[in-house]
Amino acid sequence: MAKPGIHISFHGSVPKYKQVMDAIIQAIEKKQLRLGDRLPSINQMCLENDVHRDTVMIALNQLKERGIVSSHQGKGYYVSSVDIQIEEKIFVLLDELNEGSSKIYKSFIRSIGPDVTADLFFHDHNLLKIRSLMAGKLGKYTHYVISSGIYEYVAHLIGKEYQPKLIVLGKHKGLPKSISCVYQDFEGDMYEMMKIVRKSLKKYCRLVYIHHDNKEPEGRIDGFLRYCHEENADYLILEKPEDLRIRQFEAYFAPDDRELVEIIRQVQQNKLQPGRDVGLVSFGESILNEILAGGITTISIDYSEIGQRMGELACNGKKGLFRIRSRIVQRNSL
Image (cartoon, rainbow, N blue to C red):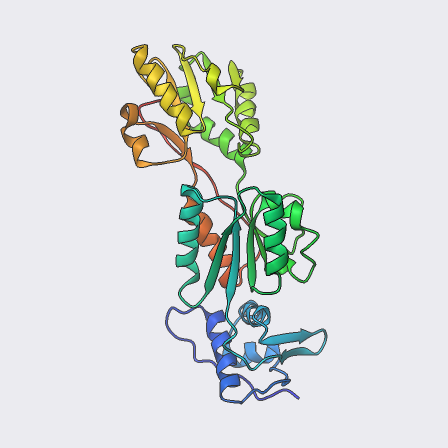
């Protein structure tokens, strides 16, 4: 039978859903709720505490993911464990260790707070390692964060039971609706960023995109081509970076620092001036971009925002799709 109502005195800046969770946990600690007891109904908790239904649902779902309560269709929620010390633990599997993944993870750790544990792994694009890591970790964590590039390789391992616990980074197309995603629209972002600096790009006779390798974000070149076709701009997709030859009155899009350094070397060698004789756009923001060649124009994303969104999905009860938009910083090079 259901126990008497759970009464909450909301206070401070702690999210309300968290205070609902704490009240239920305290009731278990004080043995007001015992193993197998049915919790007060959602409607009862809402009415007695003047709280929105969604807030109570978020709290119950969080407790459910931690194994403290369980739900039975048409019957309500029950205490399934009195081990309230069950740890909230998150599995994070990223592509490789680099500046971007480091910033994402640091922001993610700040977002989830000190009471949640996160284990970080890198698969380094090794298929056997990916499958081994996922198969060995399922059922041991409250949430799982993976990149969209590996989802197709592990989808068969992840049944419907684990889909609500999964957070995918990258693209969201083709994912089941129960899976949350933090994604970028590289095609849309590239097109929109080029439109922002359209006036500057019009100065150049040709736009050259240096295609680096198979790690190129999907859709970015499509956004470049979309802009060029719409603006009737002459363009070149340079498939072999080693064939790069800088020419006056062309603008170059360099996805990698190696190409950026080579462009600057050739610009200096030919005594050209960035922003006047040639244009230059780099991907990724850094302190060096502010200094090199009088300032390099950059298209970048905020890695900290990615980590923050990951944390919100994992710990704040949020679900759904979150788009991270690129930004452009225009400097003298354009």
